[in-house]
Picture 1: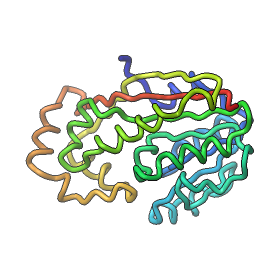
Picture 2 (picture 1 turned 60 degrees about the vertical axis):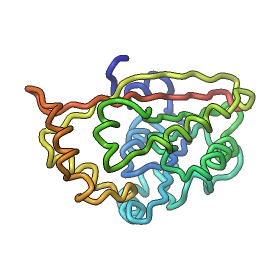
Picture 3 (picture 1 turned 30 degrees about the horizontal axis):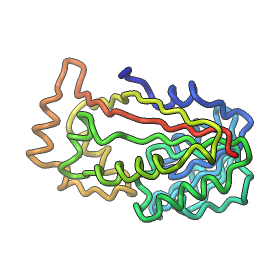
Length: 225
């Protein structure tokens, strides 16, 4: 598979200019800002209270409306948005609520709207590096099972795209700080800074730093019935 940036893949698959989009599980808001730069109006949702406190100051306004809420309870009227995007976030929804989150996406979409789901696969050198402290295998597989159960009867078409994201780090400390900084993952430093993880990290050394591959999958459902 070709190594690509997730935002470049999205640009190739969907045009968000002039559209009203739900960013479900927006995290730090990088995608929400990118969507606004591309001409979209964004409703950004994030359930983590620590991240939400930051987002209320940093995201609200300028084309973004922010809400501290999970994707299973979207504060949006029926049939009023053009698209719903889950970018690396569906597997963060509690497994028992994933079906409800997808149901909410279908509810809020206009006729003809799209559902765009980007998910990491349970494979790749980055996944293997993270497994000792953050094994998401079960959650990622649950997310794929929910999507597999979403028949195309609710949409006119379904496209599946696979690519590889490449993550690079200057050193181990940069990696540790990055993965422990996200409050919504709640990963303590002592879980990451271990001999096992450090050894696996150092094994990836190249002349340009430390690089890891993460296979990705996009499911794009278009033409909401």
